[in-house]
Image (cartoon, rainbow, N blue to C red; front, side, top):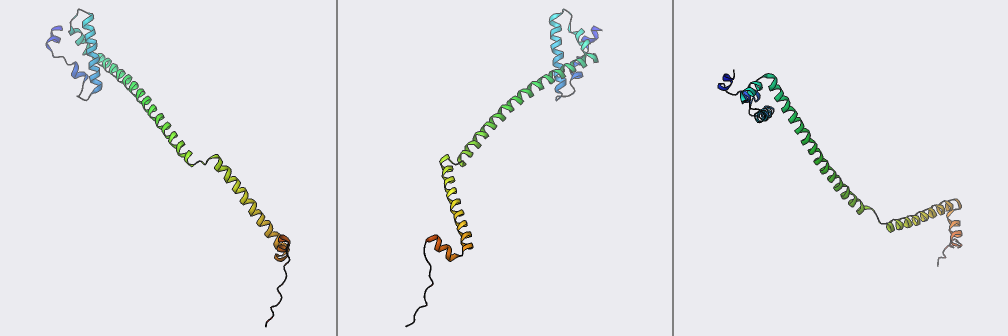
Length: 165
């Protein structure tokens, strides 16, 4: 049997890798190669016994499962690192936008003294409007002539008829 294995071509690669784009198969083959090197270093037995073992469907499934585990770990590590990088970029962008909007809001916010002057002018205008309103209502009740006489302390007389010459 060993003689047949030595004379037959090694079909492990074609058994594990179905095409050039079969990443999982390529990784499974690398797992096989790693196991083969380890086997050759640790034992005096030739490579044929390992090739016979590697040719079994169970062992090939083992290689594929190992490849799946390696790809899964790689994907997890890569995605974790990618998410951390994206989170850092996202946080930097948020900080940049917060700073930008804060500076823009400060441009529109009036100063303290500007607010005080607005309040003083507003109070003065309010009192003036209320005074005009109260005077108008009082004058309407009293009559315009008597309201003007009382408000300005004057006497309004009717003009005599002009004398024609």
